[in-house]
Image (cartoon, rainbow, N blue to C red; front, side, top):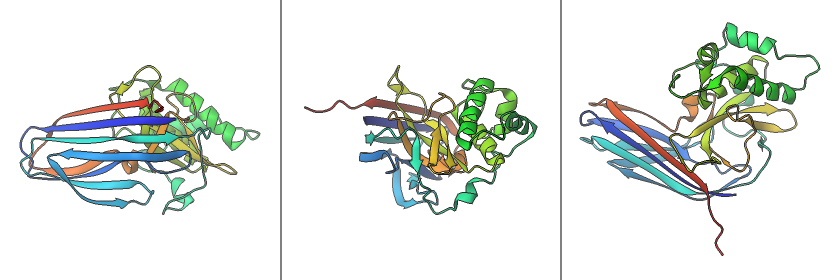
Length: 271
């Protein structure tokens, strides 16, 4: 499937910026089942400083905001072709060893709620893959999808206790629980073509776990499926902080308003 993607992020500041740097992880990965045909980024009141590949093989673009700017716009657009691999990415690649995805982070560190969740799912005759599917189903049952109830600093334990959250929280809970049983797991940020609309207000997130004989396998807990041709992988990491679309620092201003518009649609084949 050929997907046409447009992603615009607009920052408005309450006073002029004196200095700011933004780290962008907005370029899709060329990976198993995914080919990048075209991808461009445009900036208003910002300039590209450099590009590099981080420890997770994410493409990172560093931009500097123009001094005195009160508004910054980052626009990405391009075409990505995807193939259905039943959510299987395959063998591990990257600069970090596989065992680094077993250790917990501040956002995934387990508490009593997570320990109780895992105890209820473990069974001696259950395969690793069956456990992961059961885990995804149980998280979706216990944690209702609702926007505005959690934030980027919400931990997996907090979201599970609140029983509400978004795709980021579902992914963190899944990752935390998988790691508790010794299964390497990681966070994925990207795009999802919705069946009922083109325009969206955010990017999407899901999780991947490493299964012997298969390699990395994707689990979209929020939608209860493994990623298919509607999904575009952009960045991966040990949690959201490693794969966040935009992170950075600024001096001389506080962010007053942030607006994100994402559009993902199937590109019509040319005759």
